Image 1 (cartoon, rainbow over the protein chains, first blue to last red):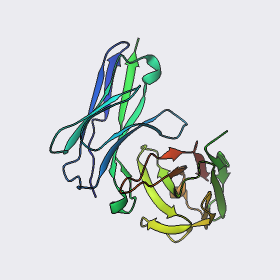
Image 2: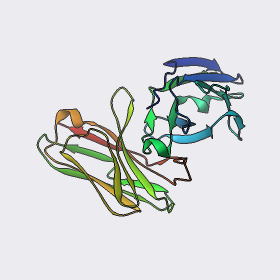
Image 3: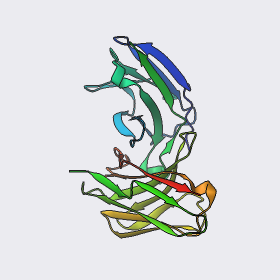
Length: 111
Length: 115
């Protein structure tokens, strides 16, 4: 199973772009890369998912290099409400739906 | 309209007791999961069911027994509770599409405290 490694924490300021990189060196061919956001006392919430290259939605972008051994979640112009823990998740149906979360990155957005 | 709902939200009990946590999803998904989040915030998968069939049992003690009466429900029963069982338990669901397990939708969590 692909293990993921993320920075433990990051600080930023309102209006800045935040980039969080996740390493998944042994990602399998069938694995997708998914990012989740978790606020205190809530369940994780889906942000974005990708397989290769770049994916963008209304809240974030996901950059995946050709070798897929890492991925970077980009949050444009963060606000205080983006303070949360962000998890990188790698997995697929081929892996038996065994979606394993990494330790997460605690992002603190300061005014 | 809560997509994935768990009950109870909080549960405080004594060691040795038996307790259950219920989960229901109204998204029509075919796969449901139980995750355990410990005090260090690591999210570990415990079980996964696809159309009422167990597909993942991730080295969880036999004291934990999931039950899926239908694909919209996945309940977790815990026997002989131990102090180390104290954690937040999250239920989730997803719709598998091809090789993609799909987006996970999580419940709000059930905080279990064993005294």
